[in-house]
Length: 205
Ligand code: VGL
Ligand code: ZN
Image (cartoon, rainbow, N blue to C red):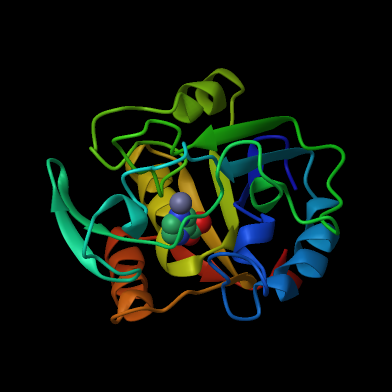
């Protein structure tokens, strides 16, 4: 891929794999695909969901609430999750089989106790930037290919924000898997299509 393209590998972490705290169905299947396509990219950045203990996105932080229910926070609706990707835990580590030694940066997100961040670019308050857009602009990146977990949350929000920040943006469909709760996958697909984010497959790269 050209030097102005980036592969953004989103949240390929133990807690999102089968057996993990917030397991994405067949989430493990993305690893081999990502290992293969990453070799085609000069520029690769990894993201890592990286929550405080007692993070606001955890159902356990909201008495009476259960995982996958929604609550209203200061910045809007928030899906509540099982505790996952807590800073420094094994669940927050990258999948052991992920083999992308040439990745140039790791962007952690969701580390503010009172704000979630599905997106690698802007936190859930829709105000606080992670700094990734600036990093990519300084590096001369114009095109972002997104892959990883989960299609309908962190991949979709990251792709939408990449597009909104002015990058040509693609989602590599077979290098992603979805959580699909309460219609989230259909909603994400519609939002991506509406925004002009195209789906591609790994064999087309
Ligand atoms: C994610 C839910 C909560 C994701 C992260 O990586 O898609 N989903 N935290
Ligand atoms: Zn999370």
